[in-house]
Image (cartoon, rainbow, N blue to C red):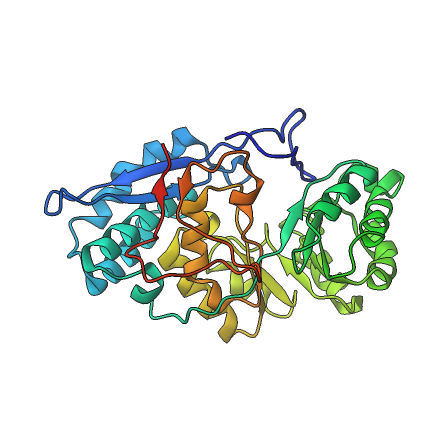
Length: 343
C-alpha cells in the first residue's frame, strides 16, 4: 500500500518508507457461507515475520482454532487455543484472530467491542510523523495541527551527530502547541538519552518510547530512574509474558495487536498490564482500517492511543471506520468490525 508521505523510523532499511506491506485475510465457515470475516496482520521483519512465514504457520493455527461455535463462548475458547498454538508469530495469529472476531460478530449481529464487553469511550488518536529533515517534519506537524497529540519518530546516527532530534522537535514546537510524544525505535544510546531528557522536558514532550535496544532492560531502568517523563517499552514488550519482566523497569508499555496476536490477545494483555500498574499505549503498524478498527475495539483499556496507521496510507482499501471531530475512532453497533472492502 503506498504511503501518503515518506515514513521512516530509526531502524528503517535504506530506501524504505514509501510503501507498507500488510496481509489481509478472509475467513469463511461452511456453516455460514453468506458471511466473511476480514482480518489483518502486519508482518514486521524485526519480529521475524514476512508474508511467507505467516502463510507457513496458518495451517497450524487454523487446526488449533478448529470449528468453534460462532458465538461469544466459542470465540473466547478459539482465541485462547490460537494464542497457545505456537510462540511468537504475532502477525500470523493477528490476521486469523481479527477475522474470527469479525466473523463471529457478523454471525451474532454484535460489534467486536460488544463481544468483548468493553465500553465505547476510547482515547483520541495521535498522529505520527516519520524521520525527515526538521523543516519537513515541521510542515507535516503544521498540517496535523488539529490532532490532540503528535508522535515524532527520532533516533539513528543523526541524533548522535547533530542532534537532529532536538532540531526537529524544536521545529515542531514552533508550529504545534499540544503534547508531543517521542519514539526512538531502539535508536539511542544511554549517553544520548540522558543528554536529551532535559531538552525534551522543556519542549513539552509527554513520553519517550523505546529509546534503547529491546534487550537492554538495564538501560531502560536507569533512564526511567532519572527521567521525569514516562519511558514506554515497545520493542521490549511484544507478548503478555514480557510484562512481568518490565515491572519496575519502565512506567509504560505499548501493546499492538500485530505483536501480541490479535484482538483477544490484546484485550488480555491490556487488562494484565493495567493490573500490573503500567500506563498503557495502544499502538499500531501501517495498517488498513481492518487492523485499526480491531485495535479501536479494545482501546478503552488504554491511556494513550496511537491508531493512525490507516491515516498514513495514500488509499485505504477498506471503508466504514470514521474518525470523529475529537479524533476518536467512532465505535458503532455495526456487526463485527464494521468495515468493508472498497474495491
